[in-house]
Image (cartoon, rainbow, N blue to C red; front, side, top):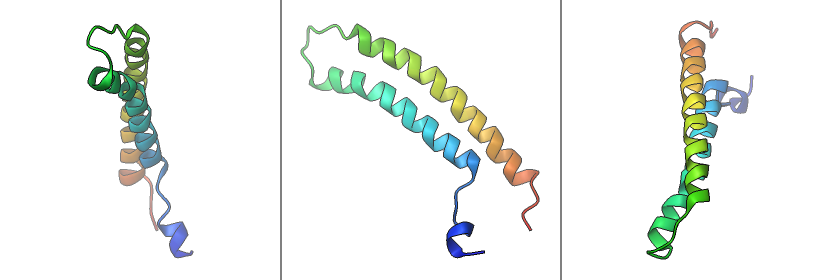
Length: 78
């Protein structure tokens, strides 16, 4: 086994990272609009994007943590 194969991240970590990225990508446009947009703007579409992205990202995060816990505590790593 090479050093690269040993350093390969587990599936649980990858799911957690992708979920956090999805959540950040869904909320970032709304936050940027709030910081840099006009004071009288109404970003309804950006709010709907955030409302859709955050629950999906939260579910992925929880599933990734469960997968990671199973990998750490159940899987035999010989």
